[in-house]
Image 1 (tube, rainbow, N blue to C red):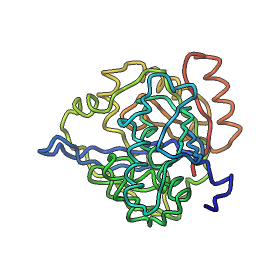
Image 2 (spheres, rainbow, N blue to C red):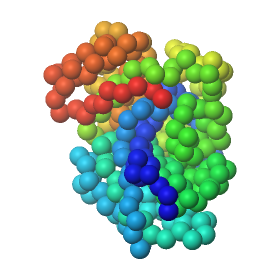
Image 3 (spheres, helix red, strand yellow):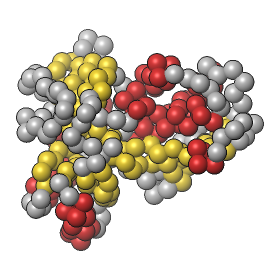
Length: 284
């Protein structure tokens, strides 16, 4: 195995939904959506070392209560790739969990995608983009987009992807804020009122559009009113050029035109709401 030490770690990039338009509730219970995924340059971290079996350990500020067994998407991703890789042995995977759980930033999905990218190198599996996408699609609707972790348009269940390049949002400073309230995706989608408010129109080169919306914001706020407090706080900050709730909540984000403005906002939220979680980053 010729894997350099630097290749034994992989960032699981935090996901945000710049827009999330819910178009219909399908007969199978799933929802047809149109969404615009973007990714921060920071997130959780997955690492690997040689081992005779597949194992997972977890640490970090949001590790408490997370399973290291068969129900963890990281293990499921590893097992799926191993089944497609001749000669693959074990791997000791370690996840450092820095993103909040059930927070709308794709943590579990991005962790699984990072594990697939990492093990593809570690095992010299040679899996192409199509195989990784197919494995990811079996793990969850958000996982395929997390494989590339680049700005893209997602339709269907969110796994029919169209990548958008060039993108004028690359490198834009972003601040994520979460009131430390977990919000499960299922009940939020179940609370959608069933009204189709129109398509998501995106074309490269991508620029911010005030018509982008998150149709899950209202049902998420009904479940977790703390989200409204976060959005109200962000709205009152100077130099914010765009903000929304991400995914099904409770994380919200704000985009800025300069790193200094983003840093000032991060300092302010830690001063005003020390109990909230926050992360300053930039879009990939």
